[in-house]
Length: 155
Image 1: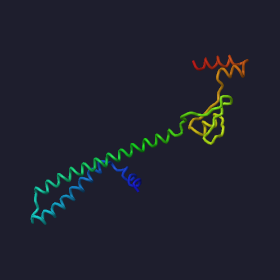
Image 2: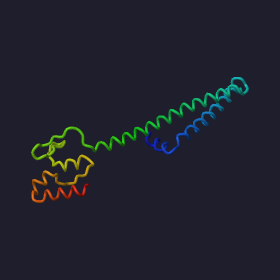
Image 3: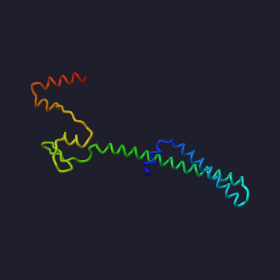
Image 4: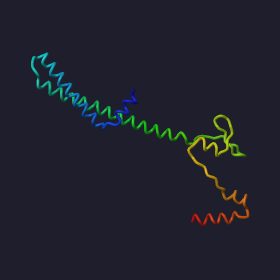
């Protein structure tokens, strides 16, 4: 219910609340002061109307400022919530990894390849390439030529 109200309130300029609150407060105070003044003294007291109007204006301002403050706080909290939900997909903490095959143990105790684990537990996308040491080890006859080409294209 509160969420529905907030969604309706969200589209309204907060300053409109101020003016609606002030006008409502002033009209209500005028009506009540007129009725009570008539009942107690038999006439409408201008002094009482003036004091009531000032009092109603101040109270309306305070209430509206409080409402605007809390609406802004709720919006800030929603922004923080969105940011935290986005961070949930990032990898944090210690990961059990096999020093030999480099598989990672997941939350269920199953071992996955590093690529699979990162794909399922983060928003990162992996691409494969060979590091210079592996390139030399796996392709010794063309490694130096490929590395030289890479250096010339990146410089």
